[in-house]
Amino acid sequence: MEVGNFIPYVDRVVNGDVVVGKWIRLAVERHLRDLDRQSTEDFPFYFDEKKARNACGFFSGLLKHSIGEHAGQPFHLEDWQVFFVSLLFGWQRDDGRGRRFRQAFFTVARKNGKAETLGSVLPTPTGTTTMGEVEEGDYLIGRDGEPVRVLATSEIWEDRPIY
Image 1 (cartoon, helix red, strand yellow):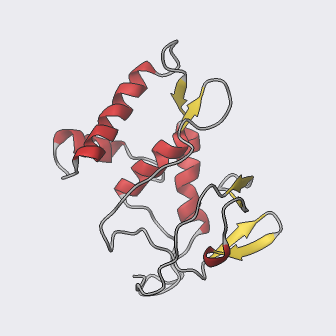
Image 2 (cartoon, rainbow, N blue to C red; image 1 turned 180 degrees about the vertical axis):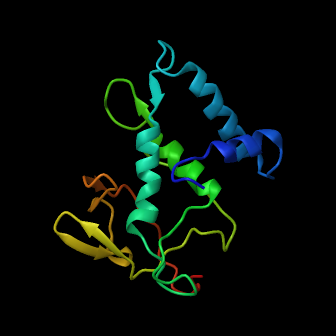
């Protein structure tokens, strides 16, 4: 799949070619409705495809698998991940104040690409850090090369393998 191109995924969800739960179907339907009404008086948001592509490109451009058969290879997002990342980073405010969605919560069944190793190196404005050292309020370097603030972290599960 092309970096940041989630349109085939949306089409497959709408056509029923991919099985998804209620909330994903609703998210797809909302996205399509919102595209039709973007930048109107009642809906002060627009979808920026370039920002969505840049956010998705961060994964394959800067991240690599750290263990297993894919170690050292670029990290490529699955279709559903491209959709999720694109929605978060593509929807922008008309008033220039940044993203429409600033926080997100998602749940995914185990072994579906949520976890990352604690030793994964992340770029910061002053050098590097690791996934295990990142704290809320820290700054990392985003795909566009600009600093971004960490809004939240999750608990560390050390008793689970990473595949």
